[in-house]
Structures are given as structure tokens and as C-alpha cells.
Image 1 (tube, one colour):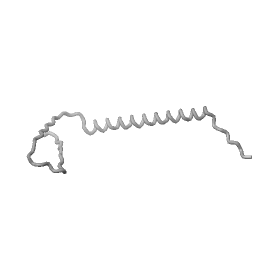
Image 2 (cartoon, one colour):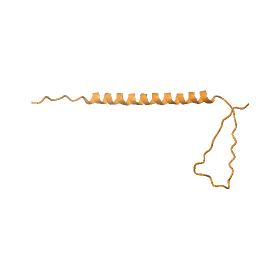
Image 3 (cartoon, one colour):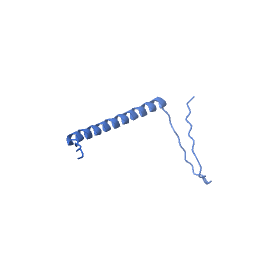
Length: 79
């Protein structure tokens, strides 16, 4: 006769399921918080606190615009 394997109790499975969900939630929260704080740090480190103004003039042209047109933006420090 073959041996009967014992089943794992339902309470054990429920505890393991709850622990798995908790570890997943805590891990996701930790990763999202670290990404958020790094983005803020990079933003403030690179940009710093400054002022500036931007002017943009859009003019109609009579010539057709090519399909591979591009726009370039240069940021220069004031003298």
C-alpha cells in the first residue's frame, strides 16, 4: 500500500498567504518611496533654486515644414 501524505492545515496556508501579501506590500511601498525620494533629490541637485523667464514666439510660415523638423532649446547662464 502507498503511504498517505499529510495535508498542510488550512490555518498554516492562511498564515503563509497573509505573510506573503504583507511582504509584497511592504516591499512595493519601500521601492516606491526610495524612487520618489531619489527623484526629488536629483531634481533639486541638478536644478537648484533659481529664477528665469522663457519667451516663445510661434510664427506662421509660408514654406511647408519638412517631416523631419526639430526644435532645439539652449539654456544659457546669464552673464
